[in-house]
Length: 98
Image (cartoon, rainbow, N blue to C red; front, side, top):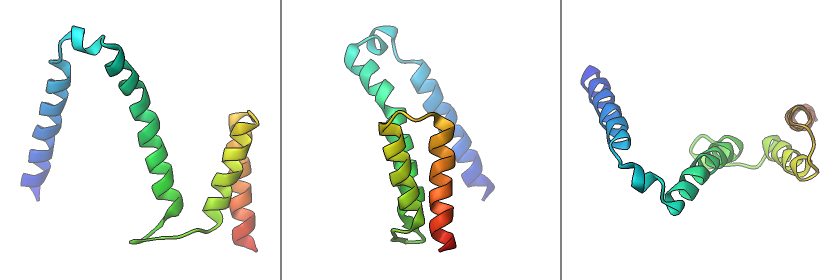
């Protein structure tokens, strides 16, 4: 087990070193900048999808999906962040209570 942990540490270090070794002219390319700006959004969306629709090895639609739908609509209406989070939690909790 410790071998896997140490290999993962070395791999992470080498990946970080490779990222820091990229020349500045490559990083200043407009396409690279655009992709770098969109990667965090894509990763966050993937994490949200997994947390909302995954239940063990399968997919499920339950109160979490309704909370996500509320959050989506609230964001479209430009509601404040706290309203979005508390509202989504309240919708999901209310449906679970029923």
